Amino acid sequence: MENQSDLLNKQLLNDIGNIARVTSAEGKVASYIPELSRMSAELFSLSCQPVDSPMVETGDCGQFFTMQSMAKIISLAFAIEQFGCENVFRHVGMEASADSFNSLMRIEMTSSKPSNPFMNAGAIAVCSLIFKAYKEESLKRITDFLKSVIGEENGFDEKVFLSEKRSADRNRALAFFMKSMGLLHGDVEAILDLYFTLCSLRCTSGGLAKIGAMIASGGTSVVSGEKLIANETVYTLLGLMSSCGLYNESGEFAVRVGLPGKSGVSGGILAVVPGRMGIGVFSPALNAKGNSVAGIRALELLSEKLDLRGLGL
Ligand SMILES: NC(=O)CC[C@H](N)C(=O)O
Image (cartoon, rainbow, N blue to C red; front, side, top):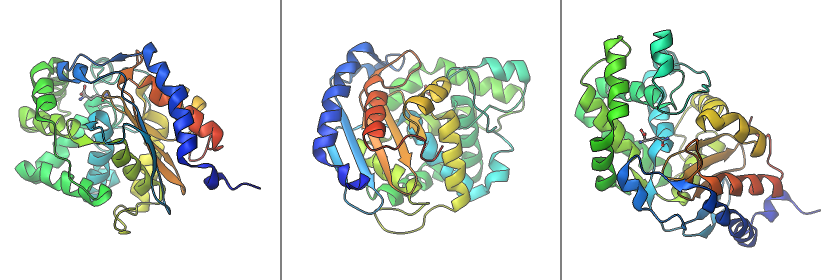
């Protein structure tokens, strides 16, 4: 009988790519950060990094894009490692939210900490903890951590950073609003600059797959073999990715794909098959909830073909 891992090969990914990429016509490239809208909707890449064998990829694998909300995995993992779960979750919740990723509503209604660290409000709160501890050194500390996960440094996209900084009325409103309610402390503009820079870090679908593989392997870098994050951090990431990784589409993603995942408005999605592999997919056209249409379709097909649904949920 054929082993599931034998089924993962380039031909399978090519076939999945061919079916998935046409669905991008149903979506739209994000434009609320103007610079993101310059990305071609035709681009597509899919990368699988098994925990114990070489990467398998298809499509425009060399294409860089920005991490956007997928960077929230890195900043959260870094913060938990530095400050401990208890300290981090004193400032941000662990609950799924039916609100969109940049919603203000719940904070005003409940006057309490942001629902989870993958909503913008929660991720900004995590940035404020990191900034409080490391000030101007914060970015370097986080990017050094990212480098230890993926084995390379790809810098950040300054045009996307400036474009978001100029057009971030909503995130700025969120952050100042949280500050006014005592939910955020420190220099708001400096915290937002850290957040925008993390969102504009450059990556490829292969890089996302390596981050996923580090989580899949229980916190060990597939690049160096080094244990980078504690088991508790791994379980926290997996739990939150399963319940909140695709915002108000997390439930549907759990049903259709059945894997812990994290999306970003650049069109990337990172998924984890615990014990087996990390997956990165990229296609910039998004659905109404801000998630990649072809990315979800590709993950759904992959999950079905390799019988992955439900692993790690
Ligand atoms: N969903 C996302 O990827 C959101 C990230 C984006 N930089 C924002 O704050 O709006």
